Image (cartoon, rainbow, N blue to C red; front, side, top):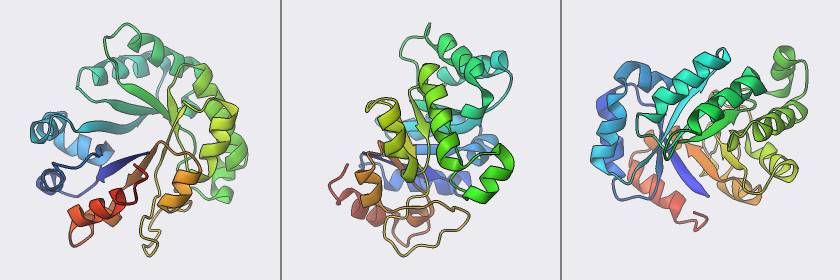
Length: 230
């Protein structure tokens, strides 16, 4: 299991400062929509300049017509990021267009697809997708697997089920992690602790506010990594 730290602070300088404080840690860094729109592609090179061993997850959740998604994926591949994501609800044709386009690129980034956002509870999800989370997330995961996507973004509670119906090597990245058990849920609905993530064979956990809102973010990361599950 790998720890992915969300760089979701309101200012680029704060995100860079956070990354610098974690320079010696074996972590991935997540650059989300807010940071990428505000700071542009240069944020990736700035993070790599801090530590060339930092691996970057570009969390943009692509959703568009197939050719546009494939074009965007090709552009992302030029940014020197190790992983990015698309929406599984964009459909199998669009996801296959992305994986086909990347197949001709040397050392392409890992592609994940988003199944059900962890901000959804089951009732809200059903009003959008007309199905419960578990059933639809599994369908999205199977569609992704068959399209050549390498894994999914899901909650901890779908991770094991998805692996059982696809492959143990099919990646699950799980947001909504509350590592210390005393944090607020904020806008996340389906949250879990680290031990539950490990038990459900999650490959990546994403932790944001419990790290960057801590008095000492480095100490928070070290406490997580000290669990010896990474």
